[in-house]
Length: 396
Image (cartoon, rainbow, N blue to C red; front, side, top):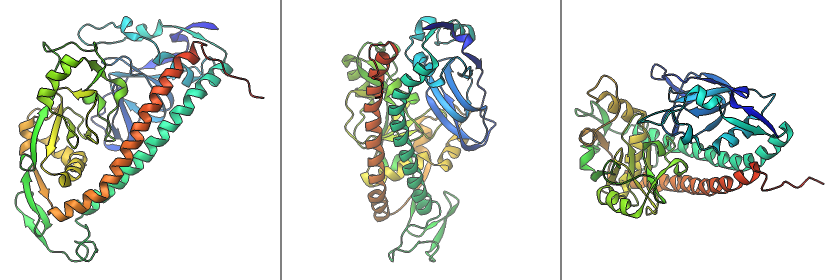
């Protein structure tokens, strides 16, 4: 083993504000992971992303074009000394809380990272160990790619049916393209199909609840119940349980009295960036939400998928951001969300849409559940591998 300071193995760079960039396909990373996608990048290649503020344990490995916000450092890696994926796994096992240089908000400086002691085996050994964990990560990534394609499919169907209004008519032909009657609606200021209506969000849901902030109510990280915040809601419509804080049973009782989350509810990240929602596919077990996550209960199952897709749409996000009373959008209030207008298709159209979309969402959920188990396996094996508690048999 050879000992190094981290400053010998990589060079740290600052992230930047993304708000002047247009939407695109390049991921923007914050301490909670991918926040959104834009059309520009800070770097193209392998990099380890290191949290500057906030969640210090969410170290990320990226490859290709990316952008990071100012709460996330990115790095240039000295590949002559270290295999990037091995260093990523090594750093992900460290407890950085003891290095925290912040006060109210956990934070890390360049020097805090650069002074870390790193012990490395040979490059060949680094690659061998990292490749084992990478096999699991590759399976996780493959599931993520499948889910991304499923998202594209769902978005295509939603746009085709509800933005272009080419849902199947009674003859299974595209409604608007086949001459379906369109009526100008003064509320949304556009043409919509005949017999379609408009409503406020509050008219098509039972309620919007929120969770509870710790404050004087309970203490974080003294139990094994996962505590979901906006950082755990992804732009892919899933919950990332790997970076959760935790609470105990007494705290859960307090939180659940307010949140009342249940199967079929839509979880909605109320803080920018918008476009992070999840439909709860099973009865919540061992987790609940904080006050920055809205729990929205649709009045009927048939409208749940439609409403979820509406919340994830670019049209909704732009409208919601423009509804902010401040100069810079930072979030949305329940009252503002409830009063927003939405076009409501007839029940038979909603039911058809639900029958098509639900299996897509079910498959996404199954892939995500498999990913959670794979991550648990990886996180169990990784310390054993890097600490030489598990040996690798030589190939014959």
